[in-house]
Image (cartoon, one colour):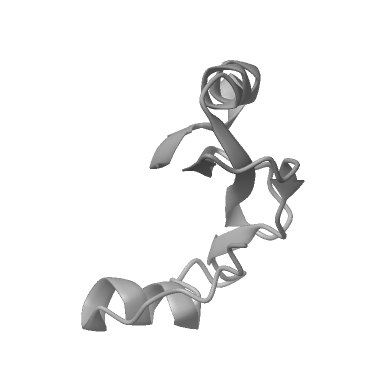
Length: 86
């Protein structure tokens, strides 16, 4: 199961997923490299007992305010993001 939610709800997200899923991966989504994450992509696998992992964050915009290259490719061309899920 994969979901996108506000980053400030991380406690509730982990609690809800931990009840039924394992191998929970959390990917913070930052608007820019120097800003706190506003969103969190969470993924859990049913039947797994692997521990929770906090992945390196995804930065949406560069310093110039434009989309980061990998984000633009995903939005405009449907290219998959290299996230590093387990």
